[in-house]
Image (cartoon, rainbow, N blue to C red; front, side, top):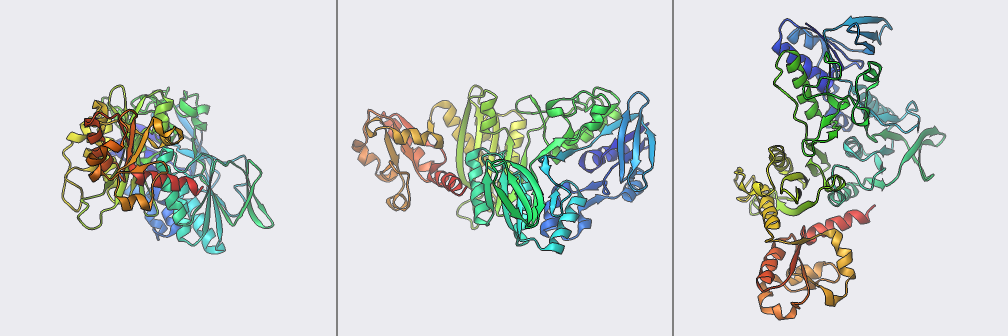
Length: 556
């Protein structure tokens, strides 16, 4: 059996190695048009910033290494320019010599990846204008910085690459402005959680513009000029285009393969395309969102590696193995913050017709009495109709990655929000609390589902504050000193410990909306008031969360 693989990196290289482990006799040819067949794609921004010092560390495997260990014929600088499904051949161009030749196959795997989105008016050949897709891109950016010492950079796009590049350019002493077409940075987050990211970027000196579209990038006498759709011009010495990616499917289209979402390659659960002898994996394929069951694109390394293994297994006769879709679980470091998501966010859930229940939890990364604990802000979403988990978002420092992985596992297993309370998670004071934050989220979701807790949210505040005082009571139950240090205008202060003795000050004929610092004391106040016959609502997230969101909005 001869297997030809178009593209290396995560998908192609993983498939090649798996096929060899399953079939010692297979002839395996991997064709990669760049100069590097297997490299750490996600590490590229950190080489620019110097966290990764040696460019060789980006290379996971070389063509010679593939041959020595696996007897895989890995050819770099080899671009497939056409697929011939009828004769089972591909036409290859050697980018070093210009030679064009045909390579036959029994099975073909496409792993072309995704290409950067580039505004039509962007001159990508102008010195100082870059995308970040390959090792070559990264080497060129670092060399440009070393040779030209740019003082100002514009980054178009506030996603994974844009934010990681911002951090690394700041660490090189370059002034950075991010231009983001959406209303906030890092779109996997909901707007409220993204405000915590805005605050960290602002604290680190990153300038941000949201709701702006880049139209042109050009070299002028004064330097590089980025022009936005509203006509505003921004000068810089360096421009990074990180607006997003699109599946690279030109070969699939030419070969007549069926396409799916956003012109990606349609595949079945075994990663077969509409031609059963051609498989496709990675950023260019349509997969199922494991939460919604709907078609999706997920340009992430984890799904690409799993898809490659499934394709290799099927080629080698392991036909029972099938790809079950992905949650889109991700994590990113943004300076001192760790930001992680899994499943769908609240905006997406609403657009798909879900009625969402949500909790917002402020929790220390480990036992608060043990030195070094830091706060995490956790948002967990469930389907109101079934109680099933839909997604989660966490912004914090230590312990974020651990909790998002637990939540992703629970989500993939189909657990309900209430089930989180029953998870038996490891505890010792340096690592967690006896009631882990994930367990606490489960307790809160169970209370919400059973009616033991009713909430109001940040987005409800404008309406509540506009209501006449006689139609609602707004109550802050923090200590006097906390209240005086800062509070939401319109909320009166009765400390929790005084509440039972001061119930006569609170009208029983109107709803009471309660707030504290993190949500715990206000929940205790909620239970006291509910026991005395009041209609009560607890503010999700607490005043700390309110401050974080407000600050993030003010700096844009």
